[in-house]
Image (cartoon, rainbow, N blue to C red):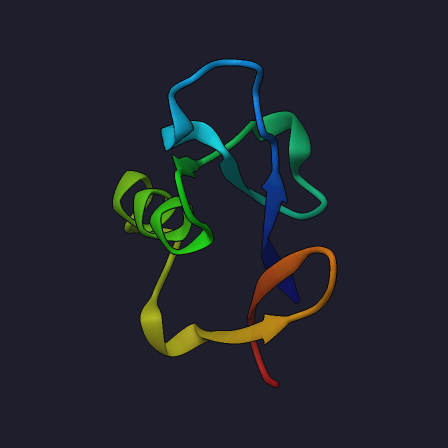
Length: 75
């Protein structure tokens, strides 16, 4: 099962559009697929950047602390 993980980056810049980064857990060398000022924006950008990989019906949402993740496959 693959997870789209979110990481709070909080870069030392005044622009808050890059506070969150979305990446595929276990495939970190691929890099971040999306960034956003909120977790939702980072996920939306990741979905827009790689629509062939993400199929809405294949993903479930899982929230954990401190990391939030979205899992692909059976729940």
